[in-house]
Image 1 (cartoon, rainbow, N blue to C red):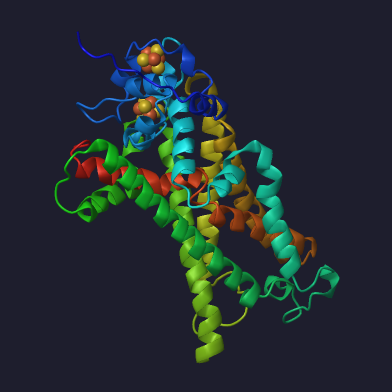
Image 2 (tube, rainbow, N blue to C red; image 1 turned 90 degrees about the vertical axis):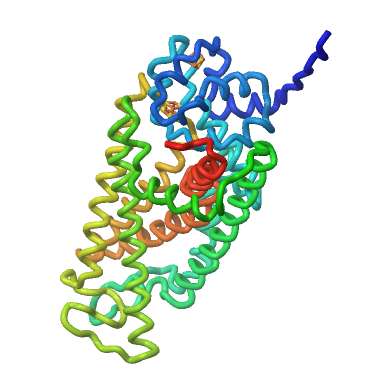
Length: 385
Ligand code: SF4
Ligand code: SF4
């Protein structure tokens, strides 16, 4: 008689998935409709049916070592067609949240970013930080610059803004690298599959797939998400260019004495609205707002078919929306010379810091870990599409 295999479920893990938005998990009766309708799953290695049973049985180690949980793009075709309403798209989302926690450099930061109990701490830390480093708590005392309101007088670029964000970005980048390394090691240890070529060679196709958001195009129910994600992604890229140009403007003038020429304005902000940096900032902001609105409206309109998402999704939308709303409002208030803009700018810094700091610990981490899993899947021949 063959030896029996004893399965030891991790019940705490099951509870965490249920708490994280996978409350419908137990409804699954393994019909496999979800794996059939999923257009993203690799041929010959289908998901998410097997992930559903692994989640029901609390097979934490196997589930968190599977690249498939990251190959899922949460387009929710499976959720829409599941005859039992088990919402596999939502369950896999909750599993990814556990994966982020597992590979986190500082697991408590992941708790702050994903647990509703800690929402106060999520925002309290940057609020206290920026309050402590601001030179003028009475905004009527902020000196004018050329007779106009100046956010760089309210919160000096150096050292307050630049030093804070450089340190934060360095910590976030280090956290992401550690997380990527841990995720790769976890997947490699479990899979045992021999890779082909250098892992780095598989990163480039994974990155180009991400840059074009190609996999989102395979979704049926949630097609609009591709546009929402694309607009948000490239607006972030545009704003990153704006930040880099702003640094060149500031330090090029300060350290190298470069003078303004043409429409390029070296020196202290604010810069005129015809400056190329200002125009790119405006275009990126409009794309940002459009992407955010598409994602928000799409999630609400498709909630019946695709699920409403959990706290994990909504707190991220809140942060992203907060960055955009405070950024645009601060700009509009400065144009009107209204000093309330200083406090709006303060909250803008709070939101931006939260976005940066928790990038490897929040929903934002999908960018790093999905790319890693896609490269791993190609490397091991799991995803040949
Ligand atoms: S999640 Fe739904 S569609 Fe998928 S196997 Fe379970 S019951 Fe079937
Ligand atoms: S959410 Fe989309 S990508 Fe993920 S398993 Fe379901 S159908 Fe596939």
